[in-house]
Amino acid sequence: MIQVFVAEDHAIVREGIKQLIGMASDLAVCGEAANGEQLLEQLRQRTCDVVLLDISMPGVNGLEAIARIRALAAPPAILMLSMHDEAQMAARALKAGAAGYATKDSDPALLLTAIRRVAAGGRYIDPKLADRLIFEVGLTDSRPLHSLLSEREFSVFERLAQGANVNDIAEQLALSNKTISTHKARLMQKLRVNSLAELVKYAMEHRLI
Image (cartoon, rainbow, N blue to C red; front, top):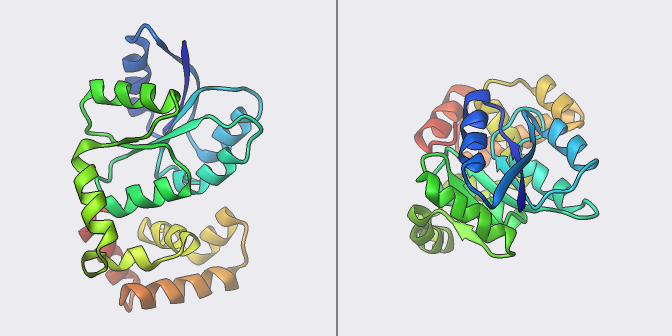
């Protein structure tokens, strides 16, 4: 039996995923969490085969949680679940150590296939993203500006776009306000935006929020 841990901050989505997994005879839900801190705390106390990890959870988000999960004594395979069918986002997750990347509008049967594949040590990419991942991410001319951001800058960018201020972000990431302000200045320069309104517009145009 493949033990699956579901980390997703929307209760309705989480319940839907649990019901879907419950219908498969070879899969079982062994735990759930609504944010990154809960997830990490529970994974330190139990083992599982696969973590189904929402990429944009509050607090420690999915991308940031990957490295912490991988550092556990017996790390499970990580299957990212995202509403972003965005090649750059998938590339970041896979580079950080996720075994697979599925989108929330995937066919339910494909999600079960993805769980089984990463549990067996394989890799999984949403079929709609696979071609784009090969062509977009590798070709510098077509790469969007946010692909130039470091992991930390991307974390700050995502939070700014969702309405958090520098103080909030500093607290969430356990960094000083000055450090966050520096990241903010750098990422705005890289994205070629001059205001928070332009930053939010950029995030919406690229379907990052």
